[in-house]
Image (cartoon, rainbow, N blue to C red; front, side):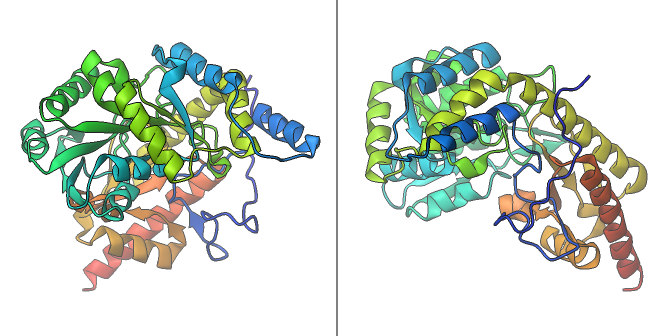
Length: 393
């Protein structure tokens, strides 16, 4: 018997939702934002704090530190020390602050494409150059091109790399050997690694991710890790995150960066909600993962059975389905434009994640099953329209 309800739709139109700022009749399955109510335990904490009625300046308490430490020890077998932790208003503010502090203009920052598109913004907006280490895609599987990575990291103008672990959008959990090799190459070339691990708790039941900093002394020494409860607990609007920096010298630089950028102070809910999430939300997360990965399975099987022109990429992490649409001969942007225009299904073109994202689309399946089934049918209808269009020239 399940304790939590993920089936009942929640009306999000009219709530200033970015995701649902779409035309009537459209179905948004694009941005990485769940359509589930968060855990009741979190709602209770928000209501409790709101009932106090005074919303002054806040700071994080020992409970905040202990919540992060306990969750990563229990869920991911990684021991974090209190002094390693710093509050930040979000993972992207943390990454952008780190790029500003750890680079100078015109230096290179390595990213492994296709990858979360906002990484490009964090790099370019700070006057640096994006250096892509394209992932290899062979037999439906993504892997790191280490020859290319070594070449990019050894460039004298490269001193920073942003790692996505697990990897968005390809849903890859990097294994220990891969992470260790990345760490060794970065260390040998004097490169710091920022590891974005915001999707770490959204993994296939029975599988876990490996924190980059837990892999070796080298990885711990050269890394800054960004984590948050926001993706996994469906609370991105709370704007709360943490930075883990084991090395004291890196930690001092990052602390200076986030304070200079004024992203190091929590609002009252950002300070208390993570405590409720990490101390009371484990059962909700387990049920959510069961539901989401069944959604992934159902959507993938529907594509294989009813839309054989498309190929879903198997993945063990995130609620984001990565689908190869290249056989239809359209750019991913044109594919998404036509599907949205003809069916109202709003999904994301793979090309925004880097050049080698071309020919793919990303679909968010963290939604009640009635939305999922609607999305499947709309995608099938869109592909039928495109096939007919291609046939008629």
